[in-house]
Length: 80
Length: 289
Image (cartoon, chains in turn purple, red):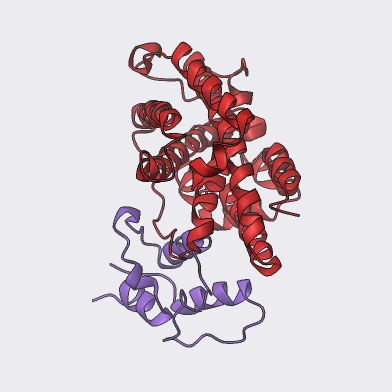
């Protein structure tokens, strides 16, 4: 399955929502640090979908895949 | 705990009795009530145009009437899908509490509430599956934060109330909009009729729950609660702008469409009108400044 975008677009989207931040480390936990919370999670999923061009199965979302930029990249951007 | 707050409140007890009696008097069989035509025409307004997310925007200007009709169909399926998911979440929360310690007094009303909400979920799902061939999904990520136990019940019932009031804004208008198909008007009318009772109950309950939380919270905690609720109102409103809807209606770059609509000059007024009564109520009881 070919994906079209890069994880940088997801990082940029989070940074736009958090102007107090300049960078986000790939291993930084997005949920524990509240960069993403229950009210912005749905938008994060939309952004990953839009960036990769691949539809995500909303009924089977594994929250572990959304913990860090690295886990998002591994789950949705790196194809075998 | 909730029973202890309600029991000394004679007015609340009378309202509970009246709402229960009204539920019994208005009881209907939803499985026989509606006419479900085999198909509904594609080329019609499926929602009142003023209630669609593109109304008065630059996006709408780029679309033909036929495209706007198609978009209104998918927006209506999204709206009823939000109802399905919202009802499931509130049923989980109310069912978790019925006939447990502290909820003795409202439990009888909860029976009517649960029964009616189950029926609403059925007819909304039926509409989606018959005419849209799908129910739009919502990513499950909510509930990641653990609120303090003493405010958890308050948050549950405020969220239920916000959801019901948002939906009712649409139902009450579409119930009487003669541009819409009879079946569309009917499901909105019936839902509005039942929700009026649920909203009346919700407002009373939220009022007493918040009065209790206010007594036992710091200023900082109350400010945090207000901030969360403001964000929750925005989140609820923005759930109407589903990129999958724009995709299904054939619009290019659906997430960009969503973002364009969310920053549109018409957005603020749309949001204000949807939550006019809700914000007024929340401000009146002091939960948001």
